[in-house]
Length: 586
Image 1 (cartoon, helix red, strand yellow):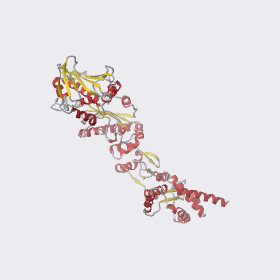
Image 2 (spheres, rainbow, N blue to C red):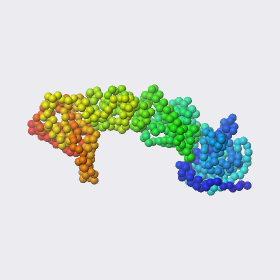
Image 3 (cartoon, helix red, strand yellow):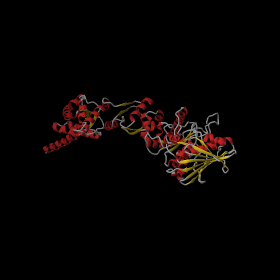
Image 4 (cartoon, rainbow, N blue to C red):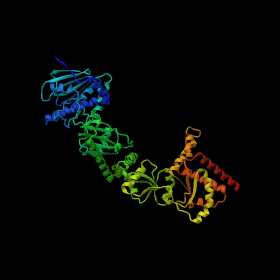
């Protein structure tokens, strides 16, 4: 004759906490049952050290009923009342001076209730492995349970669930197979479905596995082919970190498999992995870290910080070794993740020192790596791609190095190189441009004075000053130079032209009017150029003016600058004047 007993908490409120606040998905019911089974097997092994035959069997009545059996320690009547009915009491809590031993997974004694998320009843049959009476326990979501003795029950524990309406998918073989391999893939005890094949089977020693074996395992687990596999074996962590074969954002933190005592804890890596691990997919197990109540993350404590440090050292050590013996692989990795690696290297010195030699920069000598820059005596840089395009041929011809920092993160990386390696890397200011240009002699200035007067008058409307210098290559007739401040002013004027009569037109006009008057830019004429030499010999003011205006717009286009509509109109008019001038000559 069975007798009714009452739970010692408000079970309805507890179930609301479980389903709406503690657990993200009903999936976790299987995780909780698996970890209870593993802990029962661990408990039996502690009491029976020579026993090593633990296993878990799951059987299904498809879409309707599920049985999960473990051949662990089992429970006697006193333990049933104490551990199945008192919420928050764990069957492991008093085994070692009231503390849970590190080889147990469960800690909170509330996981069993997660079964109510998929079933309206929980039935448990259990018999202690040391012998004694078997019992059947039936728990209901209304806060009651029954307990009675039974005869036919093997040692261990079986949990029986009946599918709740709407939860039938959790009682399908393919779902159970997926969830077992998701949550329990790393569990040391074999798990079987319907007495068939084992669902969890992974390498036991990642350090002993070959690179091919690790990559094959990663391909099966994550369904991706990775660039490389990094074995991880530290005091707090074991497993493998895989290098992704495609670029990913630095904000991506998920997609991992992180286990606590062989049971999946989370896919999110932000609590354990360093911020720069965005280019990795990790399969990791830890035994000493503390989980949160939901078992979906770790408590932030000293051990977690130590585990992060261990992971960082393991990955950086492996990559440092790879950099010495497989430069093609490290170059492939940088090529794939260049923006992401740059973004993290600017504030993580460890990552900076690891990758800087392989990070690419756009220079006047083409694409160079950090190691090339470290071997260069003097380096200048400019902050815009437009200015870089204009100056590149000059620096190339003079065999001097110019770096373009108009690309994201490059300026910060150069600053890091200056601070760490004490390199001579400096910005190229407006005054510094003169260092790559040769002044004219007084005689040359006198001879060119007529051209300068006409040219300056021709471009006065565009606030562009004409200066004449000698520079190489001779094939470059003009060089357009503009400061960042003036470039911003030019962009405002272009925006005003585009929004004529628009809502922001008056605002832009006011901002432009408030800007101190100064020449916007400088157009350098190259007296080494045969074209400029020919122009200097001309005496026709109209023809000189037309040619200078064409060269001005050509310099803007060549440098990739935005050309304003009035500048395009002036170029068209200048071309027409040249055509008229030629016809008049004929």
